[in-house]
Image (tube, rainbow, N blue to C red; front, side):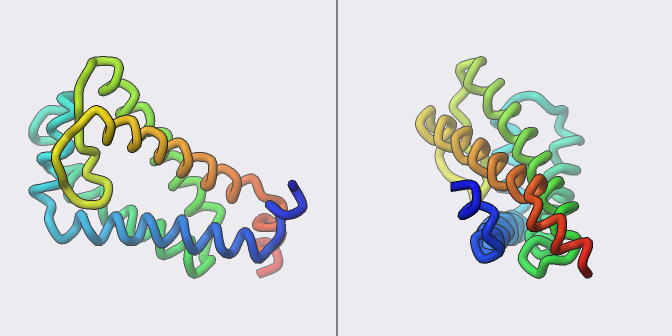
Length: 148
């Protein structure tokens, strides 16, 4: 199983899919920063002036990391950034669940908050974490980058 997961074609597919998700998520949010700011506000953890900064700053970062991962430029750095973001997303979603909040994470556009969406978003954050961490620690990706 590990041999399959270390296969360079599998890692390429994982890079493209994970990078594509972040690219799509960032582009979606760039198009409507106010809706993303409203989604961030539902978590009730940040002052209003920080919400605006995050709503404007996070989407370009997601686009950059997604693009880097897709094209393979500094792929380990990009996978580390995606892993870190997935951890932050997971912690924020976990605290919302612990506080009994139903939120819309705003990951792929805005929608109606619900408890089910919150749990699904937490699961998605876990999968993003696993994929990003797998890419970061992959020996094949390390050797690919050192060969450049």
